[in-house]
Amino acid sequence: MKYNGVIQRKFALLDKQVLELSAHLKDVTFASFKDDWALRCMAERALQVMVEIVIDIAERIIALEGAGPSATTAEAIEKLVDLKILQSTQPYVEMVRFRNLIVHQYEEIDPAIVFDIARNKLDHFRQFRNEIDAAS
Image (cartoon, rainbow, N blue to C red; front, top):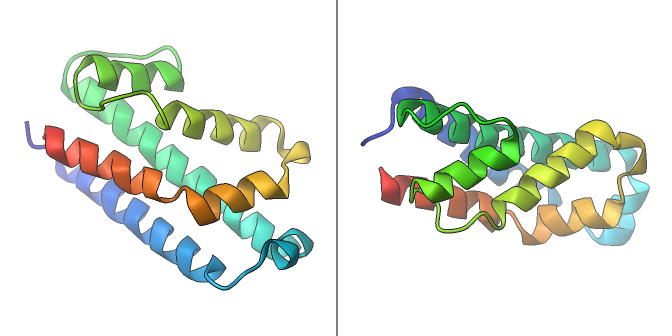
């Protein structure tokens, strides 16, 4: 099944977020990142938006496949694995957990975690897109 234009638009937004965050942090060291409130906030927000896009896409595909609804966002990822759309729940369940941390425990966000994800794990978002594209 080729997924609809809504999913394609969400992928375009995801791609843009990944590229913009990568560009903004390209030459940033962790020392400067942890001391720059605006940079940390920008990275947290961009990562939150990217995970929200992943969740939206997962839930939309589940609806299109007639396999929903999901009780939790982690369950939505698990359903995509059950539907053989994703190969594994990892790293996507970790994305959801990170999003929950930002949304619900925002006063305790460790800059090292944000920096690590923003600098070393953006490929997980590309991987998600590639797995969805391969399944459609």
